[in-house]
Picture (cartoon, protein in one colour):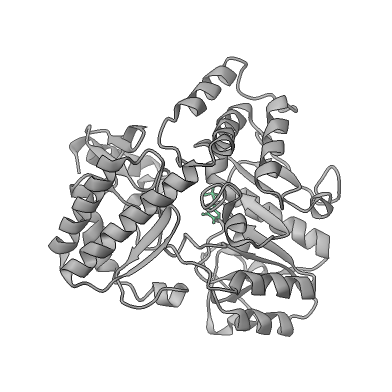
Length: 428
Ligand SMILES: *Cc1c(COP(=O)(O)O)cnc(C)c1O
């Protein structure tokens, strides 16, 4: 790590808990200290010491078109001239809501918020208000932001009651969050049976990005859809990560399953702090001031954020071909890594869909949190450092997906695969 990053990190720790504003950034899982980033353009990040890296995180998803994408930048500059916030309705937020409902047809009405965390917190409140029920089912290893109801880990008593994952989350809150392993429909059926008529919502990442990339098995999403239909449970797809990434309409379009509600974030803000939740009009009509469920935000629908997000979505909507390119880039990188593994005689698991993938340092099939945890995190740490040394910036944790952007050209892919081959060889 460069001198300036080291100095800044030391200074940051005096004023910011752990020196960072979001925990994974601290590199704790991979060793070493974080890089402080000065700027970014296209496929590249540039740190305070002027080192250049090919970015494989893209701000954890939002920069699907690469950094400082010009149409987005232009729209923000244009909007900037009219000042930053009014706390009153604007034309831009109507355009934004309209384009979201066009691109994600299951979303008939939508409310803008300021982060993915806010989106999921609000969505379950609305689902509870709509059904008049208290409990929700979430899945081990799925992340839905840091709202109290979602910071619940597995325990042996998980069938009936969750245990808080973090101090500060009360037992009272935790007891309403029921847990099931991902990709296990039978576990969900048992929970529903044991809590008949009490479950408001099932919330999940339709493709998980937050225990590394984990795909839904055949029939899993449909199975959840069926259970929700039978029991009048609100099915919530948390597409904060997968929305506008796996298809213009997200994972729900790609897998052909329609949820009742959807939460969005990341790409929807084009790099600005934005989230959104929406769904069937009948459910969304419960949101204040149309209905009784309160949810508000001083800066929600903020003009700067809407400008960036709208420009992003508009570009995506008008250029659906970019997904074909993303698919090809993903395919090329993943098959290149697989070739290196074969060549080096290594048996590691690769999970991949579209422009998301994870290389797990395990030979087990990774389909849920338990199998994800079979990975060798120490080896991942070495791999991360070896890649960084070669100018490739990966997510600093095994339990994250990587996110590709349209800014990756042939020369970047070549550099990524070369670094990958050398790194894998080096760490054995
Ligand atoms: C990132 C993420 C969130 C949280 O969004 P923030 O904007 O960080 O609050 C929620 N759900 C999923 C699936 C995410 O990937």
